[in-house]
Each structure stands twice: as structure tokens, then as C-alpha cells.
Amino acid sequence: MGPAARAAVTGQVPEEFPPGAFARVDESDDSAFYFPPRLVTHIDDQAIAALSEFYGKTLNPGETVLDLMSSWVSHLPPESDLAEVIGHGMNEEELESNPRLSRWFIQDLNHEIALPLDAASCDAVLCCVSVQYLQRPVEIFAEVRRILRRGSPFIVSYSNRCFPTKAVAIWRSLDTRGHASLVHRYLDCAGFSEIDVHVLANGMNGDPLIAVAGRA
Image 1 (cartoon, one colour):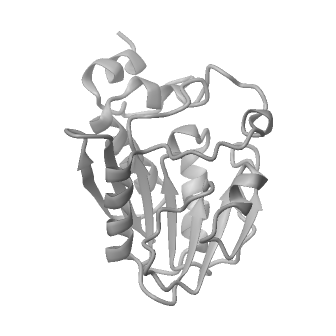
Image 2: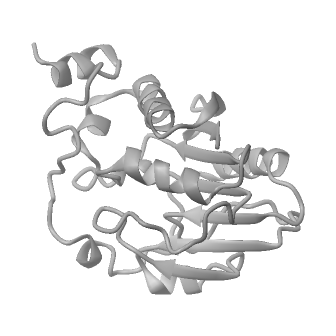
């Protein structure tokens, strides 16, 4: 049994990423896949509320935040008084429809890693239910660390939903616990510290939601 197959059975991340770990069923142009706007939420109201509460406890007034792989909603608590929320995504209509964004940009992270932001320019970076689509996650996470101020958090949240043809193979092979270990590995390899896993919604009465957070 190979490492990818063992991961599927045990829910554990292999010691080394196996060949094909970041392959996808659908390797067609992501720009075409994300061209139709999807003005829907990908987690239920209970999970959204739990994530908003977690953001509220982690973020501080006056901070500059990057919402990485964003959409038409950022799940930030309504009372948060942030200085700026920068949005990144793949669909112009979705980003234009997001009332929390101060400004935004479109970029395919699977083709272009360098973010158009200065070093140490952000106080927090958020990535909600999208990490499973990254084909070069450690490099992207390292770029996130570059733009974060020292000690600032990177919060990566996920549930049990995805577009399966666009999720990478290693994500599809793992269970929820394995996903936490995988995101932890990404953060560790990219140089983050103080990495913690937070169960925000256990999935007993709705969608599960896990947040893995590390500090630059």
C-alpha cells in the first residue's frame, strides 16, 4: 500500500508529499471554472456564526486584514472596526458584491504565487474553506508570512465540502483530522509558529468547521 493509500485509510499525512499529491481531477484553466459567479455560502449559518465569533476574538480594531481566496462574503463580525479588508479571489462579480472589502484583486494562486502586497503590511490573513484548491500551498503560505507583520495570525478554516474535481489529491484522500494535520504541515513548512487547531463547529448538528491558525 502506497503513502497516498495509507493516508486515505488512516487519516494521517504522509511523511513526504507523495507524487501526484497536488494533482486534480480537473486540470483545466481555473479562470474558466470560476468565471460563473457563485453567490452562495459554502457552510451553514451555525458554522458561519462560529467563524465570525472566532474572528472577533482574534482580530483587533484598526488592523489591516487580507481575505485570501475570498468571495461575496467574508464572515467578519459586523461590529469589527478594521482599518482595511483587502480581498483576493477569482471572480470579479463576487468580490465587487462583498461589502466588507476595502479593495480587492484577482489572481490565480496556482499560477502566480507573489502577492501584490508589501512585506509586513498586514495584521492578519484569513482563508476560509478554500485551502483544498492550492497546488503549491507551502509556497503560498510562505508568501502569506512575508506580508504579515511579526506575530500576526494566519487563520485557515475548512469544512467537509469542496468542488471535488478542483481539490488536490492529498486533500481528497484525508479525513477531517488528516486535513488539520495537513494544514498544520503547510504552516510549519512555511515557517509559522504557535500553530493551533480549533474545532469551531463539531458537525453534530450541522456543518463541521475547523480553523488551523499559526503566527508569523
